[in-house]
Length: 118
Image (cartoon, rainbow, N blue to C red; front, side, top):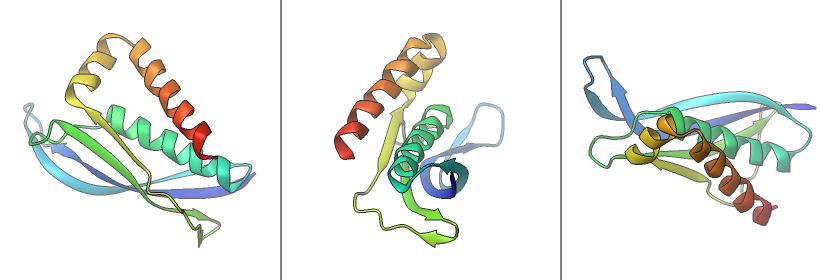
């Protein structure tokens, strides 16, 4: 197993309390282990989906977009040929809280799309 680090740009929102949201674009990094580069790419997309489902949506677009900026293995940037982006809407996030089966369907659709990539 090798160590990887994925860097994401999130177009969502931040909240300072009282139920108010402000649009915000921010970066987040996630570390994880994977057997090879292909699996690391797929795992980074799963991580992006998890961020999209759990994040706050931009109040202007009612959407959150998570883009994979770069993927590193042991400090070396990997060449990613495709731009990877995952998005989720306010409606989906609210429904996912009510019906956990939607999260499973979302993950399944991500898996199906990734199986076509590599």
